[in-house]
Image 1: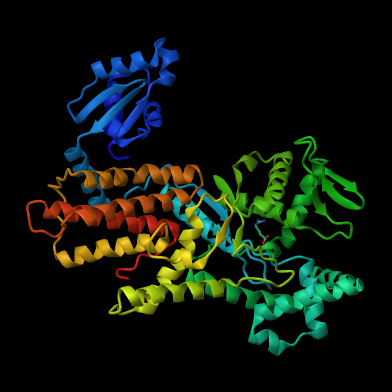
Image 2 (image 1 turned 180 degrees about the vertical axis):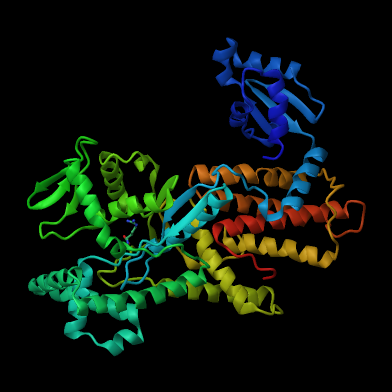
Length: 563
Ligand code: ARG
């Protein structure tokens, strides 16, 4: 909050026992706006000062310098600050107009790296809605991380290794065809995989064939390796079209296979620390000392094959060595909670003190019109179809609202994809939710298109005005304006909170609030009237578009100029 600095300074004069940081941490928003703009609760000072909170609050108010505020009052145990509206408006707007898209940036991260394991779909399968969540949550967190002064490293830990590729190779070699795969790679490979499971449920021996082919692959058999390579490339091509539509880029595509030659090191350390135990032929790490409810971590199967866990341990160590991260995030669905608890526990047992910097960023399940999806049975909702349908729904509304718009298809894509992304980020990430496309792409209500539309409307006012906003003399003090000013003022602390809680939804909700405040103002005022306050009103509109555009950018949603 821009103006919290003034409040902190003012309070520091009468509270010499507290540091400015301690004061700043305690500031909060009052329960309702008629109680003031910022509240300072005194409960925690009672012990220090040997006084009742109410008494502390009245004492502070009697001593404090009120000159730069509208007023400062004690309400029970709170000191409530009413900001000087003119003064605040001037500072908030001139700061935003000067800093533009840098507004809200801070240096908390001090340039440290944060690795973000995100998206990470499994090759030869369509990307699921779950992987879409991981992709968009990861991307938004990366942007938020950066805004807080860290350097994000976006890693796509592709699921490109495991017994399923043995099954796939067997299926392809036994009843597949090159032409079929080339024509429609992922759908065809998925069909082979599904057919394999159908056949294996009748004839058990197929599983042995699949395992044998995976063993060949692991041992470097040329034919197996070439097929695997081909499936991987075709899969990446299809994933890339989705990433392009969502405007998402990665810093690394090192998937599970990348760690094939990096697992011996893991096994060596585990042996050296005497952590490996043999159980029914398999190598495991017992975790009951860490937590009696934790099942052991499986490191090697009885046939010697390594596992998802082994590759993840190798990846965690590789990331620390390569990026020296200050935090290592894994954006993965809640169903893998135990896997990450195990992984962190093994890393600490191995003696890596940075294990505490590893965080599972869990998220809830998306159902599609009430149904969960499963690739084994083949009943999948394809992301491509979701984005295509979102595009069409957006286009329909644009045609109704703005038939003269020139680049309708481009805008429909920005709005359609933006709607899907925004909806995904709008709720607390651990919530489960059902996906209904009609609702997601609506231009009214709590949607991405609503925020985009509001932003486009503000931009069009600026275009119509044909006026360059002058950064000083920005005086406005009606109530609708004040609502916008306090919301704009809260952007920097909102950016901090979004990172502290690893919640992109905080930014999404913020953008909805700002859009609502602006639409109320827009409905009640004549912005373009040529009077003494025209420049100030346009300064307000411009500040709103700057902060809305930046909020949407943090979420990974584009801002069309017109729609
Ligand atoms: N490919 C995995 C899956 O689809 C997700 C990988 C998540 N990242 C990791 N480092 N384990 O379930």
